[in-house]
Image (tube, rainbow, N blue to C red; front, side, top):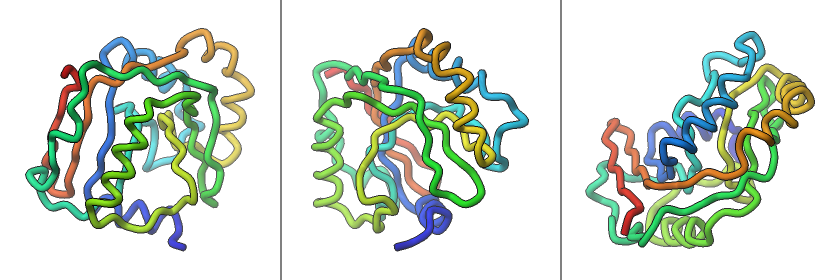
Amino acid sequence: MKSFAQYLEESYKSACIMVEFDDPSTKSVLSIVDMVPNDWVYEPEGKEYTPHITIRYGLNLDTVDDFPRLMFFMPYPQVCEIQELSKFDTHPDYDVLIMKLRKTPKIFHVWREYIEMRFDCKEETYDEYVPHITIAYMKKGYAQQFIDDYADEYVEKIMSVTVDKVIISVPNGEKLIIPLKG
């Protein structure tokens, strides 16, 4: 299995499918991002100022025209419930502070399965898909410190996010934005 760093390096050379949030949800998530002390942040990865949930990355697509838009037809935006602040601590140099999701719309999993069946995808780094929102890449140990210090304040700030668009991003920088408005 590839290291996370190797996987990320390859992933930036491939396409990504993610979902983004409506303005109130984005502002709520960014309020948590802004709470992270700058001297706790691991550079160059830093803080995540474009909050999103990745559906699948590592797709071998060269242009957004290669992707079927109809699979993302939705009659309305989707709500995702936030479970807790958490972390990924498997990288030797940094931890990743995340918002773990309690409940995600089943359609996210359907999209992911369809993408993996229909497209050539790079090997997964992790055994299980864990839908989450990345807050920041942090120096080792500081993600847990942030959770210990701010979990109560965080819980009062945000309980759910509303997903209102799908983003397809390919290596050449081209993006396709598909609103979830039906």
